[in-house]
Amino acid sequence: MGLIIVTGERGAGKTTFCTRLIELARSAGKSIGGVLSPAVFEQGEKIGIDVIDLHANERRRLADRFNAQNLGPNTQRWSFHADNVAWGNAVLQSATPCDVLIVDELGTLEFDRGEGWLAGLAALDAGDYRLGVVVIRPELLAVALLRWPNAQVIDIADVDQARRLADQLRL
Image (cartoon, rainbow, N blue to C red; front, side):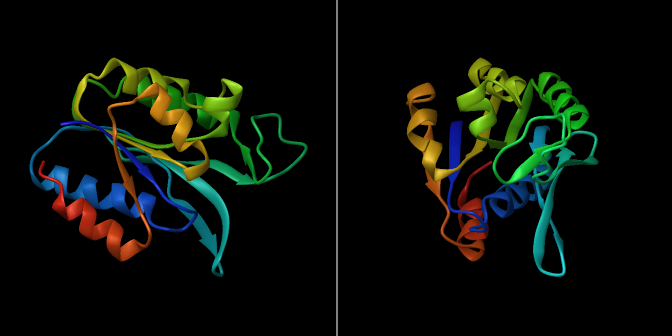
Protein backbone atom coordinates (compact mmCIF):
# COMPACT_ATOMS: atom_id res chain seq x y z
CA MET A 1 0.00 0.00 0.00
CA GLY A 2 2.89 2.38 0.60
CA LEU A 3 3.38 5.36 2.84
CA ILE A 4 0.82 7.90 4.05
CA ILE A 5 1.77 11.23 5.57
CA VAL A 6 -0.96 12.48 7.89
CA THR A 7 -0.87 16.22 8.45
CA GLY A 8 -3.10 18.87 9.98
CA GLU A 9 -3.08 21.66 12.51
CA ARG A 10 -2.79 21.06 16.26
CA GLY A 11 -5.91 19.35 17.58
CA ALA A 12 -7.28 18.55 14.11
CA GLY A 13 -7.39 14.79 14.69
CA LYS A 14 -4.13 13.31 13.40
CA THR A 15 -3.79 10.96 16.37
CA THR A 16 -7.51 10.19 16.14
CA PHE A 17 -6.95 9.10 12.53
CA CYS A 18 -4.12 6.81 13.65
CA THR A 19 -6.16 5.42 16.56
CA ARG A 20 -9.05 4.54 14.26
CA LEU A 21 -6.67 2.98 11.74
CA ILE A 22 -5.15 0.86 14.53
CA GLU A 23 -8.63 -0.35 15.56
CA LEU A 24 -9.43 -1.29 11.96
CA ALA A 25 -6.10 -3.05 11.42
CA ARG A 26 -6.44 -5.06 14.62
CA SER A 27 -9.98 -6.11 13.75
CA ALA A 28 -8.68 -7.24 10.34
CA GLY A 29 -5.96 -9.34 11.99
CA LYS A 30 -3.08 -7.19 10.74
CA SER A 31 0.22 -6.92 12.61
CA ILE A 32 0.89 -3.40 13.93
CA GLY A 33 4.12 -1.77 15.00
CA GLY A 34 5.25 1.68 15.96
CA VAL A 35 4.20 4.39 18.35
CA LEU A 36 1.14 6.52 19.01
CA SER A 37 1.52 9.85 20.84
CA PRO A 38 -1.77 10.91 22.41
CA ALA A 39 -2.11 14.25 24.17
CA VAL A 40 -2.63 14.31 27.93
CA PHE A 41 -5.26 16.76 29.16
CA GLU A 42 -6.01 18.06 32.63
CA GLN A 43 -9.15 20.16 33.09
CA GLY A 44 -9.35 20.69 29.33
CA GLU A 45 -5.75 21.89 28.99
CA LYS A 46 -3.00 19.94 27.22
CA ILE A 47 -0.31 19.28 29.81
CA GLY A 48 1.68 16.48 28.23
CA ILE A 49 2.19 13.89 25.56
CA ASP A 50 2.29 10.14 26.13
CA VAL A 51 3.77 7.47 23.90
CA ILE A 52 2.24 4.03 23.38
CA ASP A 53 4.10 1.00 22.02
CA LEU A 54 1.50 -0.33 19.56
CA HIS A 55 2.79 -3.91 19.69
CA ALA A 56 3.02 -4.34 23.49
CA ASN A 57 0.39 -1.68 24.34
CA GLU A 58 2.73 -0.16 26.94
CA ARG A 59 2.27 3.56 27.70
CA ARG A 60 4.79 6.08 29.05
CA ARG A 61 5.01 9.86 29.43
CA LEU A 62 6.96 11.30 26.50
CA ALA A 63 6.84 15.04 27.23
CA ASP A 64 5.57 17.68 29.61
CA ARG A 65 5.24 21.42 29.20
CA PHE A 66 8.57 23.16 28.60
CA ASN A 67 10.93 23.15 31.57
CA ALA A 68 14.33 24.80 31.11
CA GLN A 69 15.83 22.47 33.75
CA ASN A 70 14.96 19.37 31.70
CA LEU A 71 18.10 17.56 30.54
CA GLY A 72 16.30 15.81 27.66
CA PRO A 73 15.41 17.32 24.31
CA ASN A 74 13.31 20.49 24.45
CA THR A 75 11.20 22.45 22.00
CA GLN A 76 9.53 25.78 22.60
CA ARG A 77 6.44 24.02 23.96
CA TRP A 78 7.65 20.67 25.31
CA SER A 79 10.34 19.06 27.44
CA PHE A 80 10.89 15.46 26.39
CA HIS A 81 11.91 12.70 28.80
CA ALA A 82 15.22 11.40 27.41
CA ASP A 83 14.66 7.89 28.81
CA ASN A 84 11.27 7.59 27.10
CA VAL A 85 12.61 9.00 23.83
CA ALA A 86 15.23 6.22 23.97
CA TRP A 87 12.50 3.69 24.81
CA GLY A 88 10.44 4.91 21.83
CA ASN A 89 13.48 4.49 19.58
CA ALA A 90 13.90 0.91 20.81
CA VAL A 91 10.21 0.27 20.09
CA LEU A 92 10.60 1.68 16.59
CA GLN A 93 13.79 -0.32 15.93
CA SER A 94 11.89 -3.55 16.58
CA ALA A 95 8.57 -2.47 15.02
CA THR A 96 9.14 -3.99 11.60
CA PRO A 97 8.44 -6.13 9.75
CA CYS A 98 4.72 -5.53 10.18
CA ASP A 99 1.58 -4.97 8.14
CA VAL A 100 0.95 -1.47 9.51
CA LEU A 101 3.68 0.82 10.86
CA ILE A 102 2.56 3.98 12.68
CA VAL A 103 4.96 6.79 13.64
CA ASP A 104 3.04 9.49 15.51
CA GLU A 105 4.79 11.91 15.12
CA LEU A 106 8.02 13.18 13.59
CA GLY A 107 8.83 16.85 13.99
CA THR A 108 11.52 19.44 14.52
CA LEU A 109 13.55 17.15 16.75
CA GLU A 110 13.97 14.62 13.96
CA PHE A 111 14.01 16.81 10.84
CA ASP A 112 15.81 19.91 12.11
CA ARG A 113 17.98 18.71 14.99
CA GLY A 114 18.82 15.05 14.36
CA GLU A 115 17.30 14.05 17.70
CA GLY A 116 14.11 12.30 18.77
CA TRP A 117 12.81 9.24 16.98
CA LEU A 118 15.55 8.68 14.46
CA ALA A 119 14.61 4.99 14.48
CA GLY A 120 11.21 6.06 13.15
CA LEU A 121 12.85 7.75 10.19
CA ALA A 122 14.96 4.63 9.58
CA ALA A 123 11.96 2.27 9.82
CA LEU A 124 9.93 4.37 7.38
CA ASP A 125 12.88 4.61 4.97
CA ALA A 126 13.45 0.83 5.08
CA GLY A 127 9.86 0.14 3.96
CA ASP A 128 9.51 -3.21 5.74
CA TYR A 129 5.73 -2.77 6.13
CA ARG A 130 2.63 -3.05 3.98
CA LEU A 131 1.31 0.36 5.05
CA GLY A 132 3.38 3.05 6.75
CA VAL A 133 1.68 6.02 8.39
CA VAL A 134 3.65 8.99 9.68
CA VAL A 135 2.23 12.11 11.34
CA ILE A 136 3.90 15.35 10.25
CA ARG A 137 2.92 18.93 11.11
CA PRO A 138 2.03 21.16 8.12
CA GLU A 139 5.14 23.32 8.56
CA LEU A 140 7.35 20.24 7.98
CA LEU A 141 5.32 18.68 5.16
CA ALA A 142 7.59 19.99 2.38
CA VAL A 143 10.67 18.52 4.10
CA ALA A 144 8.89 15.18 4.58
CA LEU A 145 7.89 15.09 0.92
CA LEU A 146 11.49 15.66 -0.12
CA ARG A 147 12.39 12.54 1.86
CA TRP A 148 9.34 10.51 0.74
CA PRO A 149 8.22 12.00 -2.60
CA ASN A 150 5.86 9.11 -3.41
CA ALA A 151 3.93 9.31 -0.15
CA GLN A 152 0.20 9.96 -0.19
CA VAL A 153 -0.74 13.02 1.91
CA ILE A 154 -3.88 13.09 4.01
CA ASP A 155 -4.68 16.55 5.40
CA ILE A 156 -6.91 16.29 8.46
CA ALA A 157 -9.23 19.21 9.17
CA ASP A 158 -11.24 17.86 12.11
CA VAL A 159 -11.82 14.76 14.24
CA ASP A 160 -14.95 13.63 12.37
CA GLN A 161 -13.13 13.79 9.05
CA ALA A 162 -10.18 11.91 10.60
CA ARG A 163 -12.41 8.96 11.52
CA ARG A 164 -14.14 8.96 8.12
CA LEU A 165 -10.85 9.00 6.21
CA ALA A 166 -9.44 6.14 8.28
CA ASP A 167 -12.62 4.13 7.65
CA GLN A 168 -12.14 4.61 3.88
CA LEU A 169 -8.70 2.99 3.80
CA ARG A 170 -8.69 -0.60 2.62
CA LEU A 171 -6.51 -2.69 4.87
